[in-house]
Length: 511
Ligand SMILES: Nc1ncnc2c1ncn2[C@@H]1O[C@H](COP(=O)(O)OP(=O)(O)O)[C@@H](O)[C@H]1O
Ligand SMILES: [Mg+2]
Image (cartoon, rainbow, N blue to C red; front, top):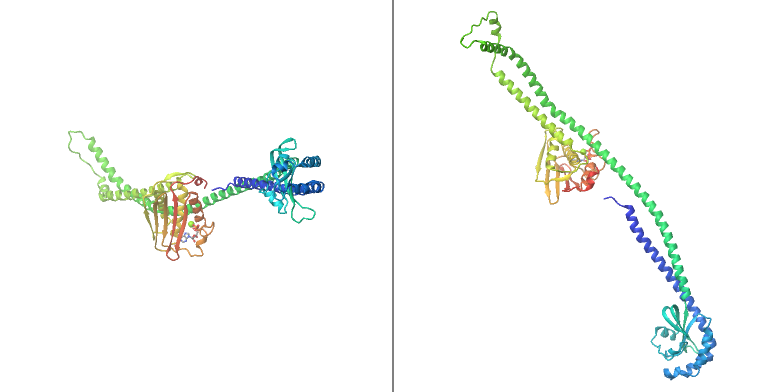
């Protein structure tokens, strides 16, 4: 399965860059916001100090005293409120403060710059609770409508702080100040900065991505080129291995052809000399026939004047069994020709199959053919048995598979010295078929076994082994979507097992 480097890189790095961009943006925003809140909090504390300094002693401490035990309505009706409010508004003008509230330790609103809120109970508010326990509480709030003084404020970002307020001699808060200050301009700036940052980060990430993409694409093209070269080398090796095994085959086949050619040649020479001996008697017989035919119908007798010919005719002898011999000799020639024709037909079947062609093939027939051909170069002391099961047609490249079968059978025979047996077995098993080649040969020792599928690994002498057979066999079988395995008992024999799917994948065209 080819690995699509560019596609993988694009998907994973896009995900990664998106995550990194998101995390960076989130971190920046979080950091800026908390820094802003801190700043604003200390600003609010300063502001509160200003308010406290000028208003606490003058108004709020006495207001706190006066408020004790009063109900909300009485709080609102306090006669000092007008004067306090005028001072507060004067102080707030020109500052970032939007609203100011003062709570007594019980959480009641004793003053608010929004006068209608005076008297409200805030004792359950977490901000108030925190502040009355001595801790300043700050949060950013967004208010769609905020009525401050006279006007209505739409969509403001506000910083809200609850700040404990201590009497000059007190150790526990005497009350709580609440201040809202406006952060809208700052937030707008923050958003602008966010967009800018987003643009810078995405620009930088895009550049980085672009550079990496170019590198990866280059790498992909180098990998593709290398795999093409590898394929080319494999094809080349497959071809040379084929030539080497064909060379051995040719030697065997030549030997196989020699016997029928030899006796046919002898028989035909004998037949010719036999025919020569028959020439004279046949000519005499033919002459006699001619004489008889020329005789007028009313004459029933002819007289032969043999004269000098009598002596010559005495020498003519014709034994009938000569014709029998002739027929037998020519019959042998015919069976010799038949053998040669069968061999040639098998050779043609073995070689004519197109390269790179996938067809529905009968692998039993292909194996039969390979065994027939291989027999010519295998000593007669080695018996080859066919144990073929019923096989469906297999979509494959038979020419490539023939090369595999030939190599396994040749290897098996080469592993046997003296007498031995090679068994070729086929079985259909669900959606795959199994082909086994077993031999009673030398077996493979455990230190050799792991290396037998390596290219150029051979234990055979030069000229006999190329060391390519099994490595090519494995490439071919794997290209067909199958597998090849081996089990061997040193001294007992070896079995190679090939499994093939009924339908070869597209990769089968490559080799
Ligand atoms: N049936 C077998 N019995 C014993 N050894 C084998 C057999 N088949 C293969 N081998 C070992 O595997 C090696 C590699 O085989 P192969 O790739 O076909 O190359 P070659 O036949 O040219 O040596 C052989 O040299 C041999 O040592
Ligand atoms: Mg071999």
